[in-house]
Amino acid sequence: MKTILLIITLLFSISQSFSQEYSIPKDYNFKTKDDYVKYEKHIIEGVNWLLKSPLTSEKTKRKEINAFIMKWMTGSPTVSIELSQDIVTFMDCPDCLMLFMGGWTKHVIETKDNSNKSKGNLAGILAVIEFYNLNKAALGKNKAIEKYIKIQTKGTLEKYIDSKM
Image (cartoon, rainbow, N blue to C red):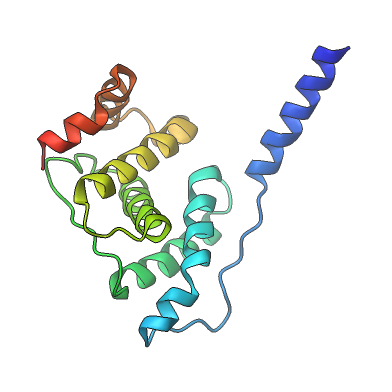
């Protein structure tokens, strides 16, 4: 009986994470530094939504959230993302690239540390791995991301990223 109750609770929790609600703020604008700070919470929530929501559902909403986050990232005075060909080896996956930048951005917002590019890259790669694992069927196999998963499994992902800096 306890096992059945545990399974039901687990399934309910999983279904809740997939049906999470997120709405882009209405009439947002990014003119001053304070405007960017004001929307940081929304950016984190948007990145989390992109990470946790299946790629095949709510495609219009996904595009709108991507556009909102991209607009914020491109003008943000506090977040600076540096894409390295040695690390971002999955350019053939636009959704993965967006999640890389989202993971980096979320890391900077949460830690207030925009100076550590190694940690930003690590946060981005971890976001891509999480997204890829949840959406592998829709994305198809990606050798570059599979390589990162193997490195992560060995426990040497941070060391690997540092070596590419």
